[in-house]
Amino acid sequence: MSDATLFPEETAFPPGTPLAERMRPRSLDEVMGQEEVVAVLKGFLARGELPSLVFWGPPGCGKTTIARLLSVHINAQFVSFSAVLSGVKEAKAVMDEAKRLRQATGRKTVLFVDEVHRFNKAQQDAFLPFLETGDIVLVGATTENPSFELNRALLSRVKVYVLKPLPPEVMEALLRKALADRERGLGLMDLTLDEEALARIVSLAAGDARVAYTLLELAAELAGPRGVVSPQLVARVAQRRLAPYDKEGEEHYNLISALHKSIRNSDPDAALYWLARMLEGGADPRFIARRLLRVASEDVGLADPRALEQAAAAALAVEHVGLPECDLALAQLAVYLALAPKSNALYTGYGKAREVVQQQEPYPVPLHLRNPVTSLMVSWGYGRGYVYAHDTEEKVAAMECLPQELTGTKFYQPTGEGFEQRIRTRLGEIARRKAKYGAKKKDQS
Image (cartoon, rainbow, N blue to C red; front, side):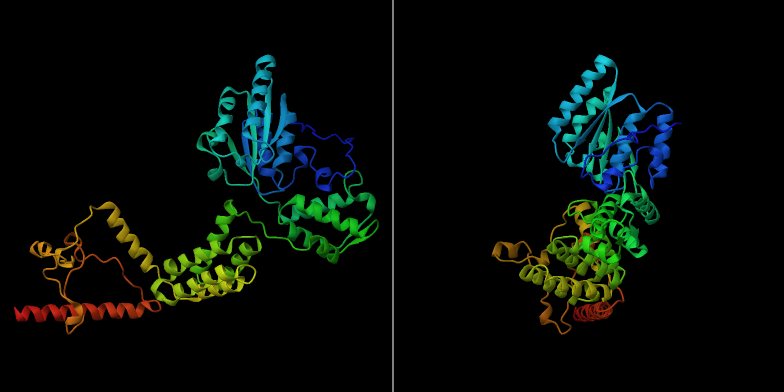
């Protein structure tokens, strides 16, 4: 199949056009790093069809470029639309016009919607009638997980393709090509690119071609014609690169999940890394503190009772000090929790109790555990049979405190980790004291 060209060779770019725009692939054959998806799309085009699509991937991986390239392969009007700059009202006007075009000429419209996840799930319903009648072919691009950001009705009508961050070898090839290209790239500058500088740009860009091109272009401007793009120049233009992070997107939950699970697995180095990723990316330290409070009970629990104290102290430090000073308090807590002995006995125990409460009827409080605050209540049997533990020699009575229907149920079963080993010993001692008290009462009766 011949690969149509979207951007002819003779295309002249206006002065000041960024290198990233000038170096966009002009055909599907030029797209690098997304070969599997491109092969599937070429298969559709070879059959003369183009289904509605959503490309999901990080910035700078080729979502917009591929969408634009697809439009030249079918006899359709191509309309580009940004959900960041416009609302659903404008999108509906475009689709109404597409409907009139199809009714008048039979020609479809390829509607490219960048950042389609910016429309909320109710607004996304506006696309459905036009998809069902075939008036438009929707090609959406999103940096967020469609499973979370697109409603079920829309997802059922589109094919989702995942685009990956560009691998280092592809990034290097793109940069070398831009440096040599005398028409669209920087070839006329006759620059020398230091290998260490190249590796630094690739590392900083983290799979984002747009970032890589921008860093190269800025460094080239500093180097000047026939200059050398050195690691020092790259450092100057890069200054400080924030780790990729979206406070509201999937990456937010991926990073906090990584932090939580690293602590659970007793890995302090990984805990510090994921914590730094979040804080350097702009995460709210209060959110992190809340999650670490949860970790202290869920994964450490009574294996180290001080874990919750440490977490509470760190949360207080976050509130009183704030960023950047509170970063070390969170780091101290993350390392403490990672190194602490682990037990989920409290977590599973409460889970079992909650399950019983949710699934079984609310059993009445045993009469002997009720407070007989009036004479009428005394006559009903409130408090009858209650034993005040402090008055016994054993300091514990052989008295059931669960509802009769749950007698003998064990919710909390401590492990042998950390302080819970002492708790197990204590529970054994309590059981022996109860048995001794029961035997004594039996002898007295």
